Length: 323
Image (cartoon, rainbow, N blue to C red; front, side, top):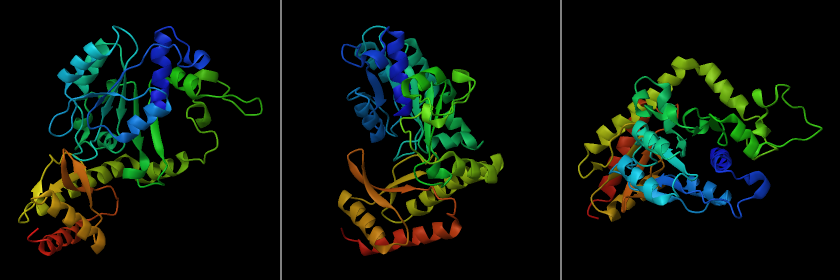
């Protein structure tokens, strides 16, 4: 929502409209283009910002946005050179797939669109040489968002925003009070957190994030991310080898989606696992079918946890045989 607020301000400013002064009534329409498998938080942010429902763009079998479809949507879904926003994804919530950033951003740039990358967990791929290629081209975007709680395992509400256009961010979300101490460098300084987000009263979320990064260091974060990916791939390999199991996604990052024949049995396996409690895997709908979704995100997951998880799925399959 923070990045989309900055995007809203900037694209309207380019169109000659002051949204801070005039609001949205009478403003040029801002079409927002998203992949068909974006996370629902994108839609929620758009609703809160008064931008309405986005325009969905076709994706491939892994949920990656199709650049040709994005080109077609931008050509037919926006008013000429008017304001537009494109939201791309680093890490599909089911498959873990990454949008083709270089091609998609090049298409968006041709139409003058602001590009935001939703990388709730996938943005961390850039921290490891083993997965950095998944983020190729994403640096060309205008803004990025990720969560520290997913891979760094810090408190749950530690979100991170990076925005190339700092004046847009601070103009869209900043506020001033005479009793507050402000950055002496003004708009050219780093600013206070309350000048760049929609919350004024908030704890110092940056402290646990800094502490985790400081204690791990660059090498530690690399090992953490690559370890999560290795565990996900091992789970996919081991569970996929069980009779009746099928891995549905290309395991490029930390997500694994599985099916066990019918939707009914897959849901029964998921329910059995939740009730059993040895491993936390849940059922989810993906591409019109029920899947068992695994998201490897905890720093403490090791080979013993992988073994226990495989054993739990094996037991669940035995308990649901015949469904």
